[in-house]
Image (cartoon, rainbow, N blue to C red; front, top):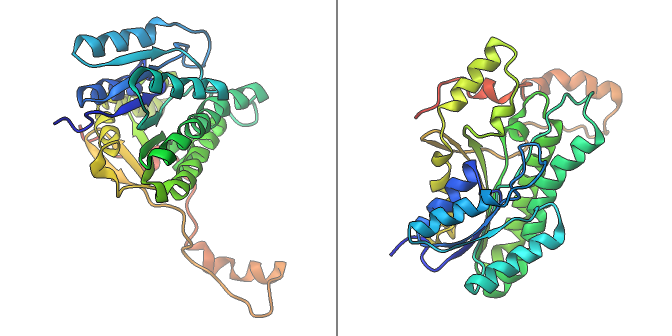
Length: 303
């Protein structure tokens, strides 16, 4: 029996890149899939129905079952329509993969309100919309899987991505809270930070040798490397895996640490501005350095 036999999944942003590979693998593993994609540009402009249709046709040609959805996840009512479409088409909903995203990169001192709002709307609000639409069904049936996409842009840091980093850190907060809220109903929620070449990554500026080298490393990592862990987290075997952050970098899978206190100081008389300055040195050895993702992952991907 296939690992996702009888399951019904919604994969947002699954017309291209990582989402496409997830939809194809889930269908191969027996899931019936709602392939959602607006078909817009990497910046979220325009639409094209054939982007989702092509993935649906590919799934059907391979003997699987799928339907297309062309709505933007940024609208609350669209998420409810998508869940309803899954239930109307296949009888239920078991898995939600929140993958849809756009980029509007800009240095924070140049970023417009529109650039901020659009990225937050698609990534963070879109993930909330889909979670809120599916959660009551998962609660009632006492089963379900949420698999969300975060990023090292937020978990570690990247330059020129304040909107994207904030959205991706927000998605981790949403994931953790969802895991806590839904645990009693046998529903899991996990996040994945992917490293893979995609059309969104293709928008990274390459104005220096270091930027060019970074992009060349990313080009070695296929979106297909991400799909297996997403499919696994959707299986029954992964019921005991929840509230975790996974990274996939080529053929390497990692688990990320989560924020916890690393050092503390106590003053029985309470703190003053001056006394805090006096203990700064004792705390400073435990400060996290200011880094970007490339500093933490300087080695070539294991592909």
